[in-house]
Length: 122
Image 1 (cartoon, rainbow, N blue to C red):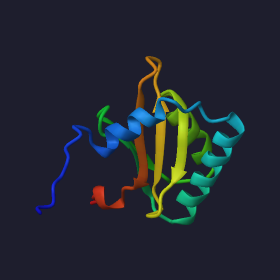
Image 2: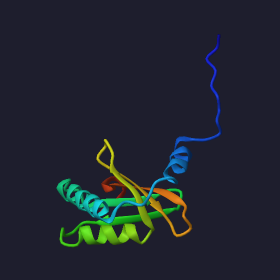
Image 3: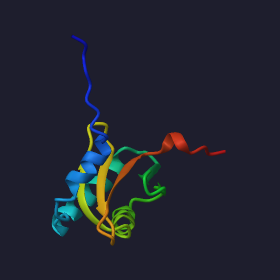
Image 4: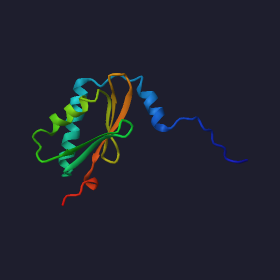
């Protein structure tokens, strides 16, 4: 008997997007904790360039870390300007996955990751 695959017409991203619809926004205390942890991880990595990316929304923001003083504040403002945070989690590879719900109640995934490879300083 041949191995048969069933095409459900949905990919993993669409499935996750559908599941996240049922989630509530993160509690502000938990969100602040996640922002603090992410900022600390970014600084501890000694990487200067980080990107916040939503491919679906064509939204790309590069953080250039020259000082630790305002990173937590800037990261928080940048994320909240996009909507309410539904999920914020560190991945096994050290990057962050952030689900954000916009004003139209649509959910989008953003990734925050080391972008050193994408910047050429001359």
